[in-house]
Length: 132
Image (cartoon, rainbow, N blue to C red; front, side):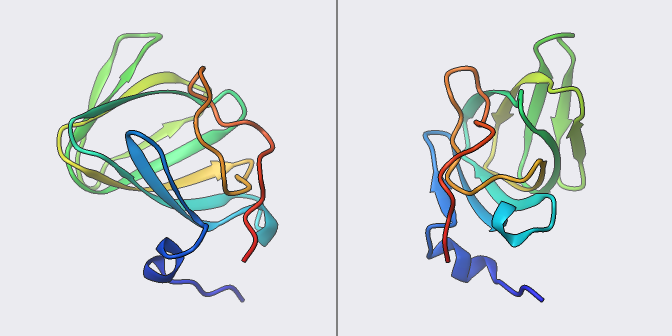
């Protein structure tokens, strides 16, 4: 059994920060569950270009207000508490936060822990492993 708290994990190297977001990776590849689970905060008044070429992601909004724009179709969808969006086709998109967004994110394949977006907006398939 694995038991962790978000508060404790935020005080370890499981917390990764970028210019427009911070993510606490509660479950990672080395936990051997076949997926990773993160609580991510997207900073207010930011826009992040994302294109997960190596991963599929499901995202559930816990708190905040924003939108996701598909750069393939041009469709824009609001993100509010209770909204889930699923990037099931390696979707190229913009994530905009009007207010700070708090999101629960699941990745398959799982992340190792230290991933940040590359120039294409993707996470590498393999990255530095977080050790507890």
